[in-house]
Length: 248
Ligand SMILES: [Zn+2]
Image (cartoon, rainbow, N blue to C red; front, top):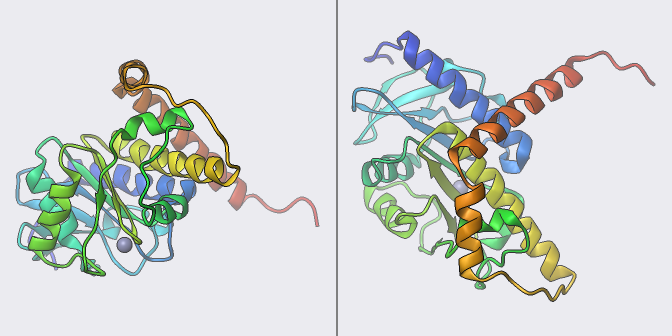
């Protein structure tokens, strides 16, 4: 199926989105073939979404994406479309500042999604997620526009939302921001769970300190540096995996 031609710019965008998928898999977001990623397509016709039946770590390039319009119709790409396309259509519709959306099941954040307590800032990572919203609903999968709109409302103006007893959805203006948001969210939830498990009593920073940290650390420059770091790490891991075994 291909109503829309994939031009050079789209190829480059999807190569970066594919790399983002593999980085997220490397950093704990992979869960078999579950989870999906979208990027807003130029021209306003819809969005590119990772195809179904493959894991995040198996997404290699443009052929692993399908283009979906705002009503969920697949208008380009030969792979299958994930049924939860409304997560992407409704967040991209509600948030013109967002260009990438991810839904995944990172282990610690998924466990934390079932908790009723707020995220405690044991590490700097949590400062990205002040008043982290939690979406509660009665559905297993988000497969209608109405369910997608409800999730977008829970997300509000934040960049991440927990989905109770399920997983997370996060987003960004750029690929770098979205990927870093997902990775820092998983780290923050891991720190919370480990800290609580150890019964650590710690003085939590106040909201003023946390706001200042946000200004000083959580910047687009930081996201770019982290993105480049994750790209190098992915490359090194790929080379190590491809190298012949020296021992045993
Ligand atoms: Zn899910």
